[in-house]
Length: 311
Image (cartoon, rainbow, N blue to C red; front, top):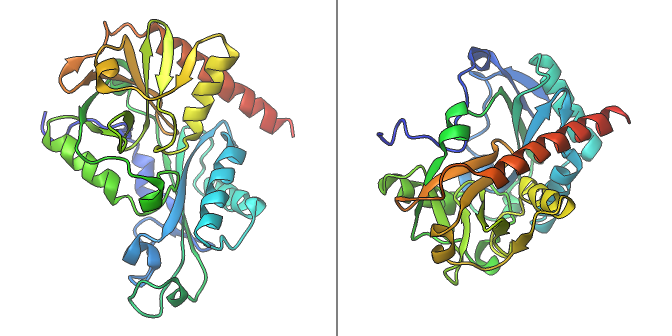
C-alpha cells in the first residue's frame, strides 16, 4: 500500500455533498472555494490558535459541554479572547449546520486564532483586529474498512513532550510535533505513529488516544503527556460504570506488543481497532472488550441525544 492511499484514523466515506459546503468565517457563510483568511492571520503565520473537533448526531452536538470546557480552558490559558460565550458558539454551529442541511453523521472543526496581525512577527500584541473564527462542517462517516480491519501503528522517534515545552493538552493549531510523528510512521510503512512520552512509556498516537487490553483489563497512559481527549475520558467512564477494570498507568512497548487488543479513541472515529504495532499482530483480531465498549459508547451517545433534546 502506497503512502498516498494508506488508511488513517480520519478516513471517511466519500460524500459528494461536501463539494459545496458552506463554511463559517467570522459570521459569514461562504462556499468552500471562497472561504479564506488573511495571510497575516496569526493562525496561518504562527499556528497561534485553538480548535475543537465535534460530531453531530441526530441534531445534537455530542458532549458539547465537555468540548467547550476544553476549548475555553485552552483559550484562557494562552490569553486568547474567544469573542463570544458558549451560547454564541452554539448559535454559530446551529446556523452553519442549518445552512448546509446537516443533521447527523457530521464532523465539525471549530477553529479560533488570535486574528490578523498588523506586522508579520511573533508578538501577540500585533494581533489587533480580534479573533478569527472558522467552522468547517462535513458530511462524514468513518470508513467501514478501518472499523473491521484495524490500523497499523509504528513506534516513532518523535515524542510527546513535557508540559513546559508545549503541553499536549493544548488542542492548538501548532501541530508540527504530531505532523512529524505522522511522517515518520508513513516512512516506516505504517498508518499512524505511536508516540512515547519523555520517559519512554507508551503514550498516544499522532492523532488519537491509545488503549490496550490485557487479560480483560483496559490500560491507557497516565494522561500526563497526552491530549485530554473527550472520547478518551468517556471510555474510561464507561469502563468504570460497567465493571470493566481500567487503569491509567505507565506501560512500555513490551506490554503493548503482548496485548490481547489495542484500540484508539477520538471524536471522529470513536473507537478504532489496532491491527498491528511495529509489524507485530495484536491479539487474535476478535476484540471482545473493544466491541463491548463500542456498544456501550453508542448507548451513551443515544443517552446524550435524549438528554439534550429533553432540555
